[in-house]
Image (cartoon, rainbow, N blue to C red):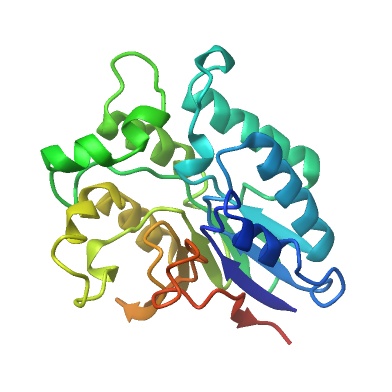
Length: 253
């Protein structure tokens, strides 16, 4: 049994959708997939993708990303409402959004957001970052409250016993996961990449591997005895920073 990781497939792009829906329905029937968010802002496309992947893999694990929580029509509720709708959809499809345990491995989905612990956003970032317009939150919610709301959902599971612990999130748990070659003008995005509080939860879990997405920069680094892995598919033009294929992160004999 193999465990594969993937994130940020952004199926609004034709090339990305063709790749994902072109995956074999037979080659991965005994394998697991960790899907770390940002599938599509379109609910119907997200449902189609999750349903397809559940037919490809023995088990699929998922956390929503920020794009998945975009709401264009406010009459359908806010982003927290959409988050709950996605969790219900996942449950109906047999997709895991809660901890899952086998004798040899445990897989722990972790919800999060960004709280500016990686830096304060510039005026330019506040103007161009789509979440500020496309995500809708309850009155009086700010980024720190949003982050705490999602992190609190993880708390009751942090003491769950597990063997070989693999956790995953959409957002980054530490900013030093970003490689040093990132250009200065791209570092402007760092404030909206994640939160330090997430890494505290990962350490409490005793994770051996943590999969994350969001940055679109593929990485496999070991820090504090934890292997942090990003296998974002990314946008069509991001071939230099994304391998654009499934990545096996663990194998059980």
